[in-house]
Length: 486
Image (cartoon, rainbow, N blue to C red; front, side, top):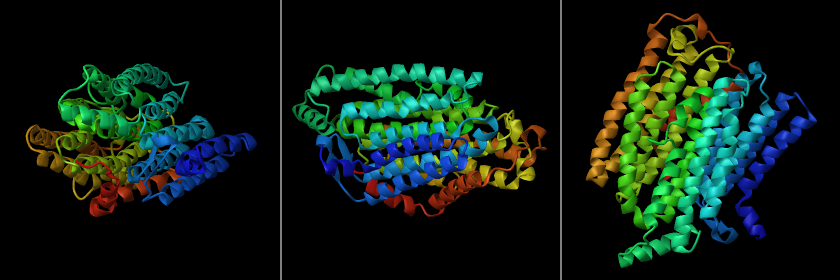
């Protein structure tokens, strides 16, 4: 280790210090939520600045286990944005329920630190350790409302199934290490490229691919490894649900980029059929079940599964020879982050008063009794549907276009994605109908959100609009972040 290594991993170091500072401030000034907020948001702001200062640099640390490149910078900044929005949305939700903010913010920052480490990991062992640093705090966040039976149930299911999937992924990583003789991503890729040139592959490679596919598919909530998602999303506090719907999902796709694209790129023809099947089944089943839901929170959970399928289309396009598929994947991940978190934030605003449910009847007349929340929810839902000129339209358009350019089965996958996008319009627009064409429900009356909450909603809406009206703002960033070619 050298001082240059510490400089390379500076965002990780600062993020850990921020998490520790939050706890120290809370102990030094108990009950001072304002001090905790300043520490958390100010600290994450410093992390964001450190990340941006690293833009354009390409270097490694710790013998090549940690890689700093444009992909690392892009994903790190996205993860920090997720943490900031989650904290902004959590303040009003936690306070009336007498849930501590400091522990929530500290655990969240540790989870985001793990996601940031995933984005830069170019070693199989470090990748697994980073994954556990991301998901273990996630188990705690799901069960944060420990007196809520639904939260406890969701946390237990998430923990047990998550532990199994982590073990399965570790088995797959062990197979790859044993067959290639290295845990470095570059060395694994070189060994597999040499095998591909000879036309021979180790006998156990298929088993390793199977184990890794199952482990990663669970983390991104792909069918049939999605069973934890609805219960965990519905039971957890709504700001946690907003985080879970984007943070671990983007983290899982970061794993896919570093592991499948980086290490297993030479054998992408072997895992392409698996990705095509996962994408097709995931988006179709997610949408079909979402249509039947009367609980909006649970509906968005299943729609989140469907969006995993759409993002997988971009990964499949890359495996089919279209490098633009990865740019489309990154665009989708960034656009989905803001519009989906915004939708969950509106639910959290309605639930500011304890006891308010997330049934669709709660949204009846929302457009009349709270026009500001109604308009914002409509924007987010229309974007999730893929209506132009919002960010969701370009996100779907780019992954579908990349698949069409791949030809063959990828064209069929693109057609299926368009059919699913049309089907999803039913349950998204159903909520809009309730907001503007149904009489108000007493249960849905919510206390006015605080200033920070409104700021988070405004940021989510503005970014969704900017990415939709000016997609070049984001496409330039994702094209620079696409460090994989061919």
